[in-house]
Length: 612
Ligand code: ADP
Image 1 (cartoon, rainbow, N blue to C red):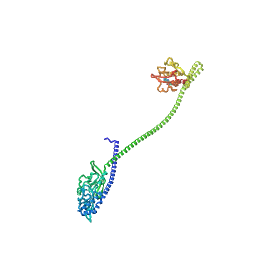
Image 2: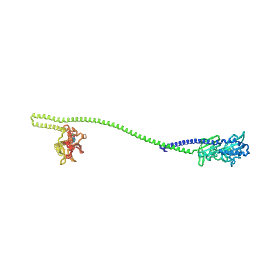
Image 3: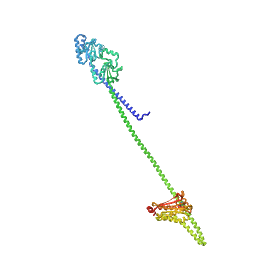
């Protein structure tokens, strides 16, 4: 089973809360409505009770007045005298009219009515015996009587008050006043309220709702029924009908009862009651609770509505707060990210600064190392050069020394011819030494001589011609490939010739110990450039030496055979001509040195200026 969602529970709780508030509101309204109704009922009932008192009290003295009337004495003492009866009849009628009493009448000691205010009327009391009425007996036995009953003669309900008529302690009769209380009932009806007056047995003898009249408020016992029948209190009225309430007890003050008022079914009433001990009666007010219930329902609904509005407000406020919190959180997160990023940047910046510092130190160290190296290189070069020079110069010097010694000896011996030959050898040795110094001068000199248009093919031919004697002697085959019309470059012919001669000389050295000895020289003119290369069929350049061949004083040749200056000087010369001297080992074996130069027409003015 799926668990109910959080929002469903919230809604259920909200509904419960709204309902609870509604129910509470209903209860509050209902209670206050009832207590108001109770207060109003008490007030009204008090008013009605005092009105009843006023009505009754107006007549209370009348029987007493009659009981002390001389004419009535005389009539009762001589009941056979029609004149006396007539006299009393007239005075009673006049008094009843004046006092607005229903009826005034006088009975003899047996209860027979001798005179009455309604004498001569169709339903006159005269001649009727009412000794069965409690008010007769009470008057005789207790000195006064009072009783509400329906008139047995007239059929009109009324309140009877009685007094005994005595002379010298002897009972002569009973004087009675009957008053109507119908006016009270009419008053109650006009207010629209449910007021009822119950006798000592609970029979409602006055009631503003007509249908309640003469109904017992509770079921009557058999004895009570018999008593009522005997006194003929409600003659002509059946008391067998439904009691107003089913409960055995009459309702108490503040009770809520259900009464079927009319065709509309049972109604709920709030009961307020006041006992009137002077009469033995109880006055009831029944307040219909339907309007109060309706008001309570409306009140409950209003409370529910208010609760719903409050809840909605609360929800709205909470939602707003959640949005605000989310915004704040997002802002905080952003700030945190920014500060984190800033921290990272600071750290990165610091490490960058450190790196820069380290780099700077490394650079310094490198520079120092470079300087040291240069210094060391210089010293090494100087050492190498010294060794080479010492050897190159010592050898001819030693040779010169021995040659001179033998020349001296030959001169002393007079062998002039042989001495002349020896002098020629000396000349050779000196020439060799001057060649060496010439080389060094070329290397040291910064001024490389004049630049001008030079036909590179002629330069190649002249170099070949110089080398030719050696090449021919060592049986080296030369392969020459050059454009027929010549190619002009800007440069210094002597120095380019020096380069070519050096390359040819190295090539001749390389092939010296090979069986097949070939040197190929080519001049290639292409795209405003001329490429000159000298290739040989020698062993090529060892991989270890490839990087060093252009270094000054690098040589693999025996001492006395090479100075290691040729290629470095050639490199410098080609660079001065705006070109670059390169070397690579050919696929088929042997080394190939080459350089390219811009042709004279395409040469850049800057290069020309630099060459000048
Ligand atoms: P040197 O000829 O006095 O030794 P160079 O500077 O002319 O000085 O040459 C340097 C070195 O380059 C040579 O000693 C040699 O080892 C190498 N070398 C130059 N030309 C060739 C070549 N054609 N074949 C093989 N090795 C060569």
